[in-house]
Length: 403
Image 1 (cartoon, rainbow, N blue to C red):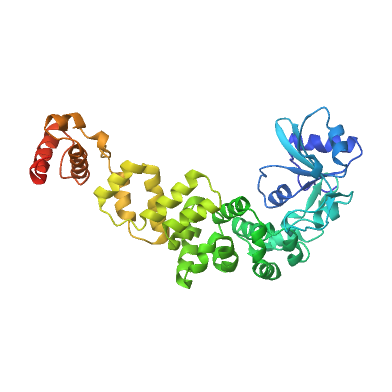
Image 2 (tube, rainbow, N blue to C red):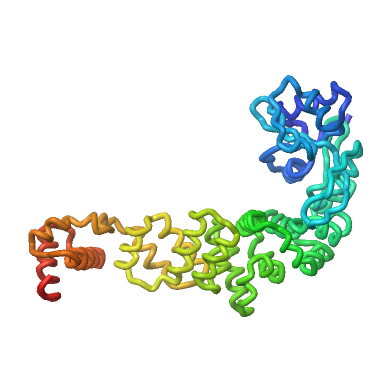
């Protein structure tokens, strides 16, 4: 007897298969769990395609906690041993009038028909204990060849659901695979169909794509698709696009990669693009900060004051960004990050506003004096002690005239 392909399935998954078998239904692992297992990776989750219709699935698993995730589309989430398992009835192709969603959901009892409607060959494999691997479209061979290829005719796949264009590029970047020539040509020629994809879904796919190991290569190879998804890129020169794509590929976090890709559009357009994609505020804030502050041309004192304003984490991000963009600033930002100086903000000064008021400073003059004192401390011209700061404040007052 041949050794099972996946001999160590988690207990909840094995239990789900046993329940299905006991009730005369077939179940198959599908999608990412099969792909990841074949690559020697531990899947993040396990999806199971089942031969029974949704209400039958609900009946079979009535002794378990069930969540009707998308019952009208055939999906039921069953909780077994603390693990959420999505069980979805086999489905087959039908028309997609809006280039995103099927006009109706048609159930079938044929697993091959279910696999035929999927996007990429590496996602169109199924595994059933006791039966083995179902691979009607050559997904395992494409995994070995490190190739992303659409199931069947790529133009048909992309016209059905235009999000698949970005999904193909995302998987190529994340897995660091090449894209099949026919699939690549269809992605470029049908790029206009991305107008049917919501901003949120475009952002979700790009965010994953940009942190993939092959991101720089995919960005460089598919400029027409990327500038359709991100219109500011269309205004780049060839050199700007090459630099942005390369820098984005070198960044480790998605906000940094977005900032690199949008850098030559300018901070205002970068912010507007983030808003159009409906990113969260923290993401937009980081993109804006990086685009506004690179290259960093200030001295160590300026870097220390910036550290006081935004914190070490953002300064680390800026240093990584300058490195990726091959822009000035990395050395001075490193020096600021390594500095042990504790006086980085006005409130850290050993002389406060009340002290300055007692010295005769009034109104806006207090704020101007505090700013000057902080600069003197971060530049290394003055120690952060009350006596030294009083002397510096007196010198500032004499220089500025009456406060």
